[in-house]
Length: 284
Ligand code: FAD
Image (cartoon, rainbow, N blue to C red; front, side, top):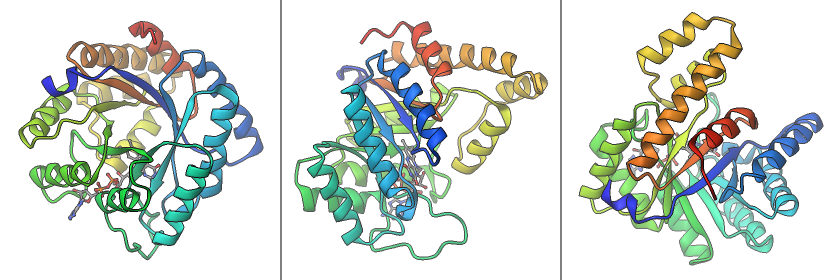
């Protein structure tokens, strides 16, 4: 973990672009609450193939205008042409945005057409080639490994390709087993990777939602957590109380051991993230 301890911890929140007017209003309330905590940035996801292109842009610009806190757009390359990606990057440069999260993305099942940039490393290379050092580039990291990776070692090597292509920092997929993260960092150090790798934190709000996401992205829910969640059944209050306790402990351990910040997957809700933040006593 030595490589991580030299970085000043950064704390951030992730949103997805809202679809309806009602959801826009709800996200505004969430953003206002979370802005009071003074995070380093709010990031906004991007639907692969450009499906949320305008909404991601509008949400990012709106966040900055209303809170003064950096809005960081995710940009994914799968299913998009290089011209489309260049247009997106240009619009962010014009809007004064200096940070992006660069991803491959996942096309919805049944979609065809990968596009010329096949991996996030190629997207990072493209961003550097087209925009030089304008953007601070974040990429994704997988302490429990990406579900499509042929092997753990190959996945690490592929992660290194993103760093070598010019990524400045990384945010991990969420996990509940901190050892997976520590070991991942140690493996990165052995490969000479020294960028900050910030743990992604998924507050536990419902059992069904967590299981669905974890199945899709390959994140492991430890058996002791799953068993407890299943036993709570429809008792949402108990699930949330248990979830906050588990996630608070995880965050405390990670920070004590030198993690360079935390990135919360908020699902556009503020309550659990605020509670965890207060429990840990983050003082920005
Ligand atoms: P990559 O780094 O390209 O890796 C994908 C797979 O390809 C891995 O298995 C890797 O080992 C393999 N690979 C990489 N390079 C090579 C190579 N040269 N040869 C062979 N294999 C290779 N998805 C969205 O659609 N929108 C979002 O906004 C979004 N935000 C995210 C934010 C974070 C912090 C994280 C962790 C994930 C996010 N995702 C998002 C999900 C992400 O798009 C998926 O996990 C996707 O499947 C992989 O994206 P990646 O950028 O990690 O891909």
